[in-house]
Amino acid sequence: MREKEFKIFNDHLAMVLHKVESFSAIAAFSVRNGGQSPPPLDSLNFSTSQGDSLENVHSNFEHLAAHLNIDSSRIATCNQVHGDTVEVISSVPNSLPRADALVVAVPGIFPAIKTADCLPILLIDPVRKVSAAVHAGWRGSVLRITRKVVQLMVKWFGTEASDLIAALGPAIGPCCYEVDDTVLIPLRHDLPSSERFVTVNFSSTSDSIDSKKSHRLDIVGLNRFELISLGIPEGNIYSTGLCTSCRPDLFFSHRRDGILSGRHIAITGFRD
Image (cartoon, rainbow, N blue to C red; front, side):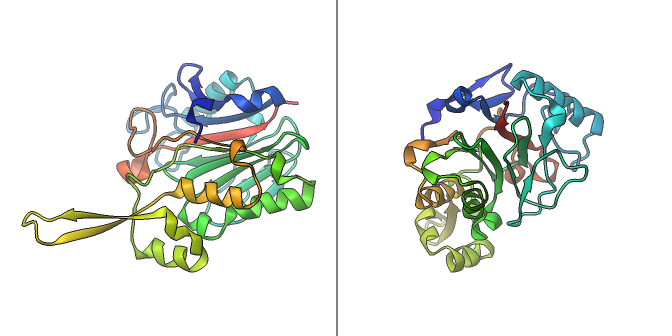
């Protein structure tokens, strides 16, 4: 998974992939510390949907952007709906597009997506200066949003899969991501290969006779497999290797904390 390629720096505001810095690019995943938001959204929260103020969120954007050495007004986000819509943009939209992935081929515009357990994927084509931010939860994975983004980059911009660098951010891990038939049925129907990323655990009841079956999904492994199947070299795929639910010191988690969980942001793009 090559976790050592990431570093937490700048007052512990984000995990940053070293690899892309030589291309004048960024690939950063925020952590929960170092912002302005009060509990339970403490403190580097990027969404107002859970009751945080616009002033706090704006301050958090400015604070992180300053430490990443980019202009916060050049960060482009979208209205995420757990679908598979991919938007290609050339500037920061005046109104947020309803999409779960943004693709940019203009240096100085930084596509970003927000997560609290779902997998953030950042894609960088250092040859053609194209970048993408992808929100991949189980619904997006079933809809194969990662595949659609890569295929769009290839078709529209001439990206070669072998050139792509992929960064997989913090997400809920198979240690904590228990799923039921709501997830398993569409997953098995649309992604036959997904079964290898579902593990079954058994926990005994107090009388030690009956046991409860628990299915756990590896959303990171599933999307990593998707990227490899598209021709992206394994050596170009980097993962933070951290579970959001396991690390309340670093991450928000909707599964762990419920509706009052804050939101992280994942940012990519080229400075010039």
